[in-house]
Image 1 (cartoon, rainbow, N blue to C red):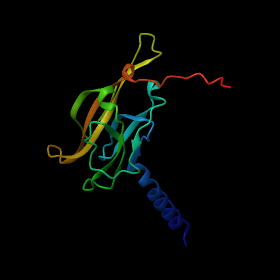
Image 2 (image 1 turned 120 degrees about the vertical axis):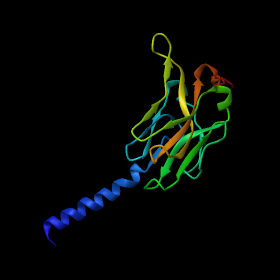
Image 3 (image 1 turned 90 degrees about the vertical axis):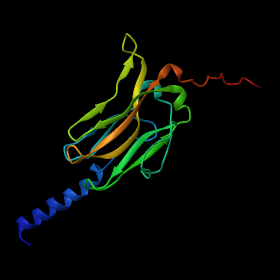
Image 4 (image 1 turned 180 degrees about the vertical axis):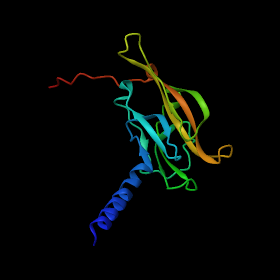
Length: 178
């Protein structure tokens, strides 16, 4: 085989190995999605974080992205999987956290993010910048058709998580018995 053809095949097949990593984005069960970026080609990417007040808090996430949306008031988007092309659906991984309604307030509903745009939530800290007081998280995402630009876009819902409402378990002293 000619060297230039072999290089071309190597380049093409190495490019295909990268594609699945670009088509999905996951935060995991101990991080939260605070933002989303939609590339010019319409491919979304989640921005994930682990705020300091959320360090020892975990959610029960779906094993993989299998739902069309996370409509429950006790869930947020843990990740998504998007097929190649604008005709493919967006499947989301939902993370359940039963105390979410008590710890959060609705902030934004139905925010549209188009190709080339991004949304980034806030993280509010105390006056010294040491302790996180609240942060924003994306609770739902849906792929929609943007008829104005003949492209796809994403509609997100955002809630504000208040750290001071999070009840920490009490630390017990070890027993000295017997």
